[in-house]
Image (cartoon, rainbow, N blue to C red; front, side, top):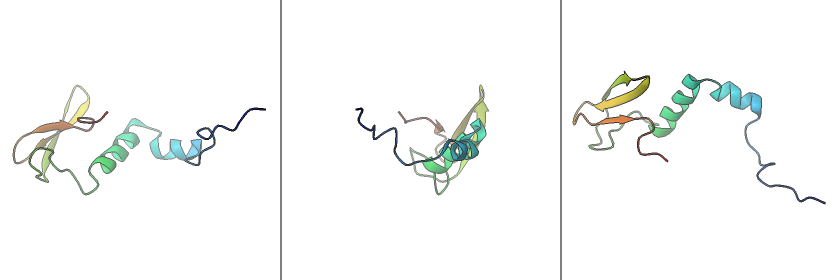
Length: 78
């Protein structure tokens, strides 16, 4: 008799709910932005709250309006 795998049967999103919320790159990026900066962008260097967005090779970047530090959505993550 096999034991029940706790990871396999954990509660979470169903596949249809996951696809509804995160089914496209745009949806994933929007969710990641909201998770990383829930009250809006905050510069990791100076703490300023305003930035300019730009794209470089299809990746989005934010440049702080005060210290001009540039960061990406994934910078500093695992």
